Length: 78
Image 1: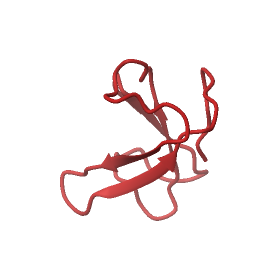
Image 2: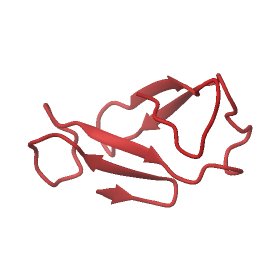
Image 3: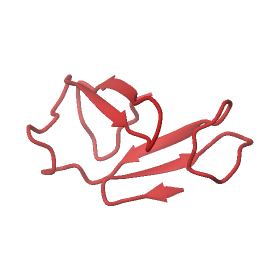
Image 4: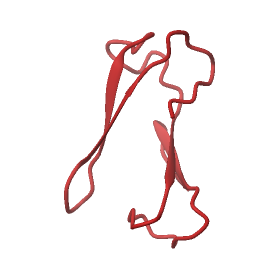
């Protein structure tokens, strides 16, 4: 698991190694932590957002999602 004040990430695949490189077959769960008041503007409901995963080398990975129509303390954005 990798963690910072803004996010945590965990390899949830049944296989893979422990390095910080996303490789074929590995599946990671990214959890955004305590974002209330840290975003400008606040995401709110039904808004699109993008997470940029920027590696030291190679291409940037863009993950786009939309916030739910109602927000709870914890929401899954599968």
